[in-house]
Amino acid sequence: MASSEAFPPLIADQLHYLLNHSPDSIKIENVRSGNKFNPKILDRFTLVIPYCMDTIKWDVIYNSEYPASPPDFIFGPDDEDFMPCSSTDDSLLDKVLSEWNNQDSTLLLALVQGLRDQYVAYQRKRVGQVDDDRVKFEISTVLTRKGIEMQMTLGADKPEEVKFAVPLVMDMSINKLVVGCPWKNEQKIYLQVVYPILRKYESAPSSPRLKLVPSSDLKALFSVEDVKLPPWMDGMCLAEYLPHLEETLERQILEAISAIVLRRSFVEALTIFLGRPLEADPTFCRKASFLAASGPFPFVVHFFFPTQFPKQQPALMLQSCQHLNQLSEPVKLNLLTDYPWSPRWEVGRMAERLCDFLTDEAVNFKKYCNEALLQH
Image (cartoon, rainbow, N blue to C red; front, side, top):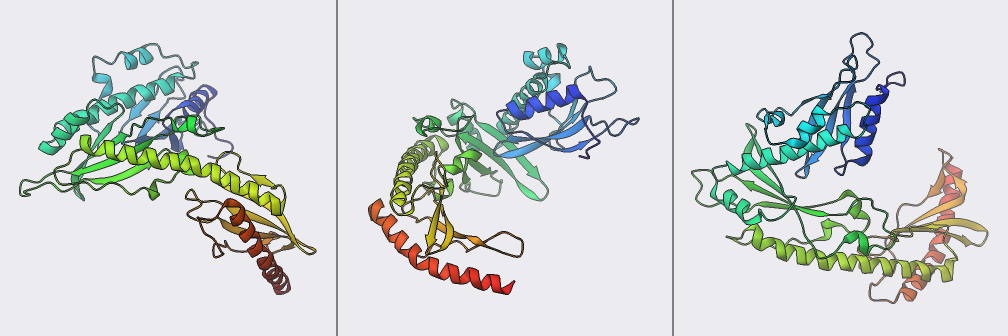
């Protein structure tokens, strides 16, 4: 967007409210103008809306020449049959549209949420019409679960599939377990389940493809990449599979919470040898930086902690306080992970052995910095 281009203030207010208050992390792209008299006035854009562990794109068309009117929507090319405003039972959409007030910044978000709710129902109806007994059975077994999204995918270049996004239910609030939790929204983990539609010439359905998808902020605490999914047995259904998976995740999340305490204890043990940290992550203890010295040579040690600490040791980066490279940036070493370490050691011994390693490595780092300076 050029600096001279801008949305009219009332449209900008509605868009700002939507982007900052939507629970779905909506983004915009393809911002443009439809004003033929003044193309610098922006009044249309594309919403990128998370849905079923993927995204859908809807074009939003305001008319800057008639700013009191609500925007029009153009849905995706695969959703030609999606006609939410033709429904007679959606009082929310009717209310928003009939009472549209362009000075109310909350109404665009309300309209998008109403349309998205209708889209969830539309996709569920499409999936329910699929001629596949397994899919019909799976729908019947998980209907009582809240928040499930479904999607039908088909096309000439890919087989017909049905995709489920299932929010996993655990007997805990992840946010409440994290002391000083910075997250605004409740963190969740979803299971994406993709069922290939059984062809008439196929005798038995293949196993679904499974993938865990977390809320974006959860990676600071816990990586789903470290979770080994339980095997999907022949004849199994989602209603059988989900409790085992949720039990596994609960256990691993509690271990991740315990790992925060261990990382904090390790940082505290480092202070005995390195003094107070220059900075440290106070919530998840994923990084910390200390000022160290080898004789008259000062340098900074950055510690980067994996979620699997102490099974995996922290990565170290050494940064000179005296030497700059050609870009006038402090000279740094590549990440170091090859040093004495055992997850069975007490945190005090971990810190002591690591600082012994740093004492020796500092000599090599100083030599590296001096050679880098001579090369410039």
